[in-house]
Image (cartoon, rainbow over all chains, first blue to last red; front, side, top):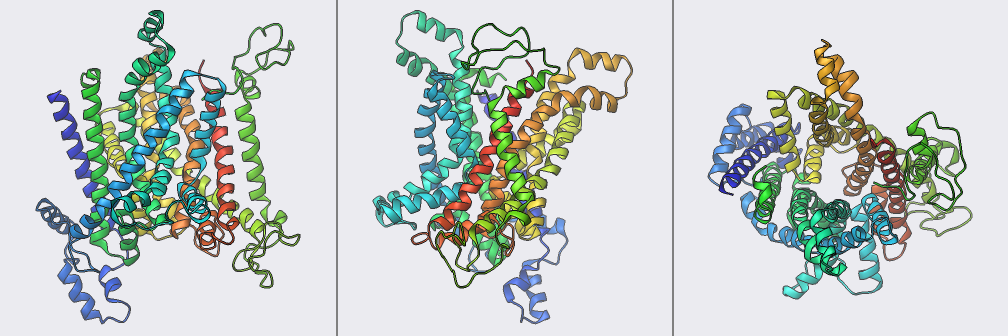
Length: 311
Length: 303
């Protein structure tokens, strides 16, 4: 287990480095001049030049990269051009909102997908199976943000059950405000999950130990939850890890629809403000977050299923 | 995935009613297995019909749309359904139906054009990496790992930030991000095909590598990429619409379903149809293409 973990951690560190490099290059290939963008059209050329010097934009790309990396190692993510505070403090103030949204969406995704795929797999090619599969095709074709708008229309505007958007006050209000966004975000991920989970469960059902369990005279429910679901758990964990990247990506859009102040809306507003360091830091934090969650699910899967460690 | 009706290759037709209840008529052995399977896949037929219909509407937009997409009927702003405007008008008096048709033309075009480069490049990279192995494989797969680590929309939005909003931004962003999936899928099948007897035979026969790749490897690995292609068009169209909604995609005044949803959202309480109809258009498009993809997967699956 330890050797497997060491190998996975090493690979993850490499990927995080790649993500850092990619983020840096992305920001420095940008054609616009951030100094000009911050100072506005009427700034004098000397003011722009002074600001460029202050931000180190005149040095060569490798020098800038070296500076960026050494700052990063010291835990410094850069300073916002617009708000003049550290990018880390901006991100720190927002990350909780996004994490809460991802958590709620994951819970919703599990609540919906596991029973649905179990239902479909237990009646392969039956009515339920076709219904679930058709539903997953429909879900894949739906833009998540549009589904969010429809949810707002039905549950907030018509039925007045839940808030239209915003964050709510207090723990209860906060949780309430996350119901519709969480549903929307989970909806983006659920179809992919259902499809793979169903196939995973079908594979388990063909296994010999299931035939043995049936031969022993166990009831169908007992077989399904005691044997099939337990063995389908590992692929579920792995799949959740793989799709978390997609889920985190869709929070950017969901936060926009529901007017939530998370990392996604920080990213979008910084892009509109051409606030390079914040865009860079946010992209980096989101990318690294995906790698860390992937690592965690890989290790968890290896813990649940010893066979994985030997691969 | 599987079709709605039983799937069986050509061969002696069973006597009596078929699985779908229709009597099986003895017919001549079809010339091609693929054509036979295609005719017996309702998923494929329905998917192809919806897709073809949408493409026709998109191509014929100038002929069939009742108004120009930017024509403003200022006497009928936010009018409901009427004989003059079949689906009503938006806040600028533009005909909703015409805008839906023209937006479909834009989004379908952008969605299809955006996947061409990723498809070709990803398939080539996957084939080469899988066949050659070595440093090339390492480099390609590390690049894949890094690109996959990024949340999809974060990377796409970041790239569009660099290139600039609009269709060029979309093409560049997808060229950078989207080839990864093809490369991964094609590489894994190439690894299997590379070890097969017929490739070994071709190599023993002294064929050059490029010929082995082109004639013996690629025909066996590309089906997976083709099947994914249709699903990818769905994902890309949904992404284009999403970016349009965020104001980063197709720029006005060119109509686009995403921007239409965004504009309609302001009128959600009063004119809900404005935000809802473009979404339904996306849904139908995605459904048609997904069914087409699932049907293709059934037909092309090796028995």
